[in-house]
Image 1 (cartoon, rainbow, N blue to C red):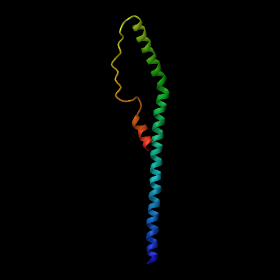
Image 2: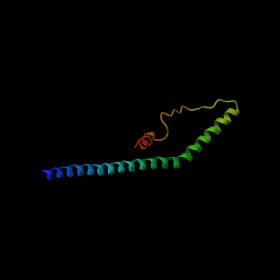
Image 3: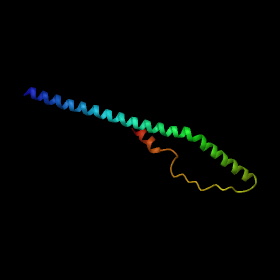
Length: 96
């Protein structure tokens, strides 16, 4: 009787250990996905930010020259619905 109880206890204990190992591996895979995604986002900024800055500098120069001539420049119709980065990835990484 005690031997059967010991076997059941060891079986349940090993099931929990294997489940914990499996869960740890799953979390590690999710962390890797998040880090790869964040790296891609940061690389995008590193590559594209100088182009954005150059473009914006040209627009500001154009606006300043028109304002110096007492003309109202076209401010275009830009509307940014969300930030220019994937905030969901960063939020997920912080919560993880």
